Image 1: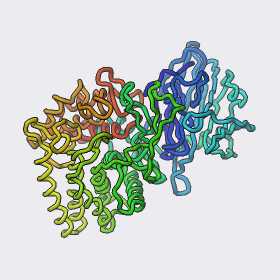
Image 2: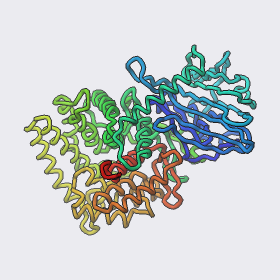
Image 3: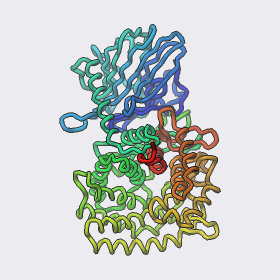
Image 4: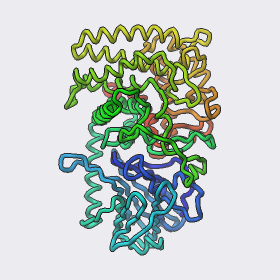
Length: 599
């Protein structure tokens, strides 16, 4: 069986320490260890058509002409792949990363567990395990033990422990599967228990963890399964050790074919994280917010009140130098494959407002064990000062233009939103004087932005002050409470953007030329912003239809990448994209029927 036809029909497993992408046939195609931004030991997703002997994957192949059926166990991050061939032979593959409560904390080892069971017929499999080192530069060297194989690389050593025949595994020979076999891949530590018993215990505990976690979600009545899957996916994009939230689990999947728009998204953007935190908070999953605020506090402490970057490493490291990895050909051969992201050098002024908005709920949510108070507010005031100083200054904007800078409307409005929320927080915690101070500043900012960001000749809020181009981010002005949805200028802006930026059912970020030319594919979160804007101005029927169309564009497991081809509906861009999964949650919450009215 050859599963080299590469697309984004992928599943995700993880435990908030590590993650893996698995294709429809159960092949590991992308896995970074020992954490979400680590070296991809399985990297075939970006190594298409490389040498005659492919490297960078882990597969259990069923011999013959094979069909696949793949799904998650309900309300979990446990992935099931069923393979059957023309002779009626079939296997079940269960993949997961252990995560559960143990000794009063979350157990989340650097570990991938795979259980393979025969389900029908005479089953013959081939298991192939080919990890790589240094972004595909070389295959890891192998050293076999009694029931394990050690894979050595320059920086790390990994161990596979299994109860399958090691000879069949190492020589990649056909193996008759008469009963279940187990594979545990992770750090170079011996497994002292029965492998099958240990894997079964980890499976049951992990299953219970995810079911307990999803049971606490405050889901809408409609689209419950889709929202739960989106929430689990967002959770898997968090790095629990520091509280960071990555924008996506991959690097360098191009935004469109042969575009050169290949970026590393395995880092924590302060802007993207706000949207993720906001979505999970709306579902009642507040622990991710608490971890993220801890991450922000540490970033603040390390920066010594220097200007904040838009993006940081998941450990909090500030420097993210960008380089190309020549040993990987790229997704479908479309390089370059990049590691690091030069956006860390940019000025993006909206980050200060993003931090304040992400922290706002911590001051008012009675469910939190450690609610924020005066001390936390005083720390946020530094961000507020930056909002006040920078809201009318040029920056790279939300879309991170590399070749130009001007005063972007979205950045200005996010700065205003930060100041506005400081005033509201201060009032809530009884700091009347500080509330009046920030309220006065917000009023000044609001008046100036309204005058500068509106273009009378176009009849629309525009991309930037005095920059008469269109930008889908202004669809958020009502969501951010800068204007009410009933505002005539906001309604006119929605009409203008749908005439100029809508491509079929999908909203472009912008239609003007950037550093790489004119964008070809639509940005998925922009379509969700349009859906929410339509609903807010009373066009709910249209909004529901567009939302249903977006759900139909999800892959077979309910996940979205960053971009979509507006003609073919094919997914492009890094995967899974937190922005896009956030869009599913926020649109469903807005459009769903109320529980009381649904039945």
